[in-house]
Image (cartoon, rainbow, N blue to C red; front, side, top):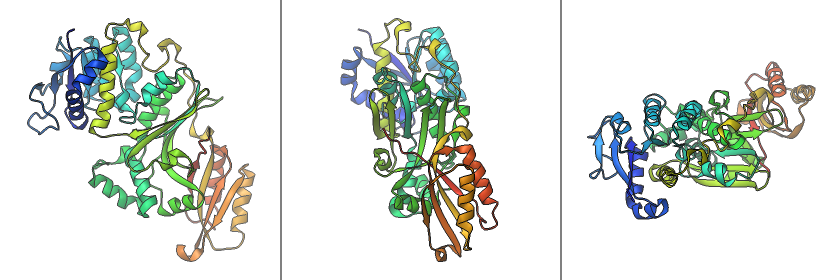
Length: 437
């Protein structure tokens, strides 16, 4: 049977890894796909720059549109990234009747609805396993393996940079800025780390997973996003003392009111498996009504880890090349006409528990004033820690864990407490989740 010709756009970290995996495992991949897969052409902006793979047998070009317009290429692998020229290339590839594999989470999260509709019209597939959690096959697991479940919630550590920073802060007692500088030196974080530490990267991935989990359109603009740059060493120590760890989580929940879609630092119990995922590793817990909680763990980035997901998508497309387009696995797990525009809840309507760190003046009655305000807003206290003042320049740190309450009530309580003369600093608030089965 004739080989399937693919064209790769971008020979950076993931592109080079994809070439290496396809070349090294070619015989095994052919046995699984049923046909040989040939890297026919590849495009890269700088052909003179050394590559992390052997390109001697590949027809190279510096014009990606050469590949898009090549009639012999059946599958285009987009590994450029971003939402500018990458979107233009993907649209043109679809219009030319080519299947697309991409690792581009921003492109899918922000423009996936449009791209999937166009792909369906043209009878081609867009595969994007590598866009979420690197080498972890979380998309396939939710879309196919859990197809018999009503997914209730999912929570994941889906950005390795943020997890590395929080792990180093906890294990070595280091400050945020110090660890961030090391993460940049090691190549875990970009020179501009905003996407990682402020949760934007995780929000892209969460948006995709939530759509597949709940059968809703992609709605990145409605995902609540909060970063980890305000997490202090004392918060990490306090959490540990109370039996918790701080993780930067992406959380999606289906409730009777709508869907929660949020990325933020979260206290989770130390006994949870997710709390023990450290360094740059990723993990996602998915709770289905039939199967219960399931955990998916592995490398969330890296050349060959991500290439593993890219190649798996290529194999899936090759297997299905001769099938009726109407009988392929839907892009977002649910049939396109069955997607429901379920409302995404604003953060003010989300119900969760809280960790509060309040620095107060060392005066009598302060704690009574704070608890009175919390009580007035219907907020019950689960635990209180009061630290010694001498380590904090005369300020008394009060640590509180609350029971679950709607966020708008907590917002009102925090505003009132910060207005007290005895509370000169802003309050540190971190949400808490039990992640129980």
